[in-house]
Image (cartoon, rainbow, N blue to C red; front, side, top):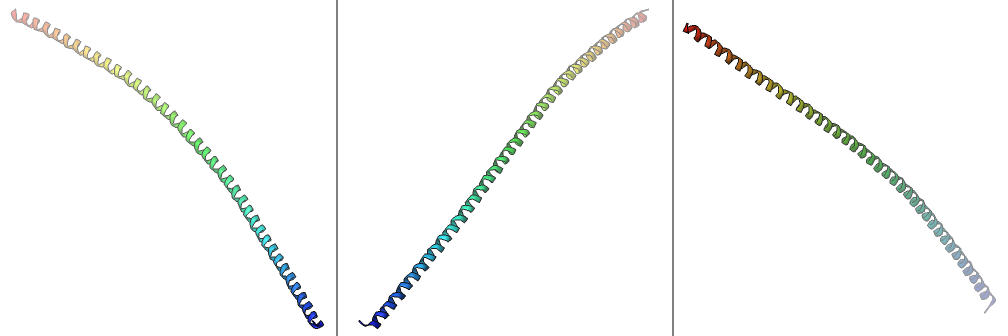
Length: 141
């Protein structure tokens, strides 16, 4: 082999080595870029997960608060309803007592009226009888 062929082969070998180095560097750059992209996506996913977890926690808190408030309102309404029912029952009882008292009073007045009426009828019958006797006695004379 001649020197020129050796030089050509050396030059070609150098070019090939440089090309290999350049390709390795490019491959390494692509790997670094891909790793960087993966890290960015991972960081974004973690941030989004953290935000979603915080949102879930906040919503759970609001839901529990709403449930407690609803439960409290239901309890208040139930107590108010029970109080109103008790008051209405007491009013009914009081009105029944008053009605019973008035019924007894009315029945007493009716009995008094009937007794007074019987007494008056009896008195009028006696008076009529006495007057009849007097009239008969007067007619006999």
